[in-house]
Amino acid sequence: MFVAMTTNNYLPESIDFIVVDLKNPRSLSQLLSENSNSSKRVWLSSVLNIPPKKINRHYNAIAVFTIPKAELESKITFLIAGRDETRKTIHGMPNVFVGNTDPADKSLLELY
Image 1 (spheres, rainbow, N blue to C red):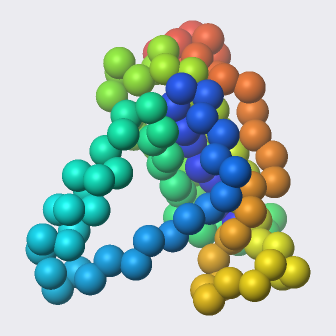
Image 2 (tube, one colour):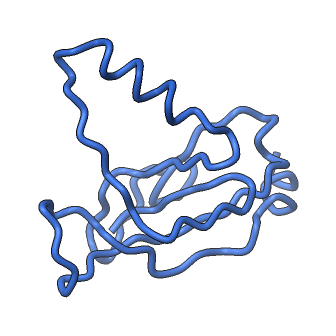
């Protein structure tokens, strides 16, 4: 499982992984350019054990996302991704979102 964070209350319907040729610098820069749409940004945590363990003692959290302060008012939503074994994929990564929060802007601003 992993935790995802989106802005603009974006709720992706699927988890799309992209294959990139890291030996070709043009491929990576082209991919970043093509996917720089600011209305559909998604941040992913590292893959977590089930049940998740706290990874950061300072924040007492299972995932930590570092974002610009300006993003705190951008309708941030958190999602949980898990693996659905009935869906065929070519990888062993989580492949479905199983839940999400309401936008957390007020809670995050109160913490800042």
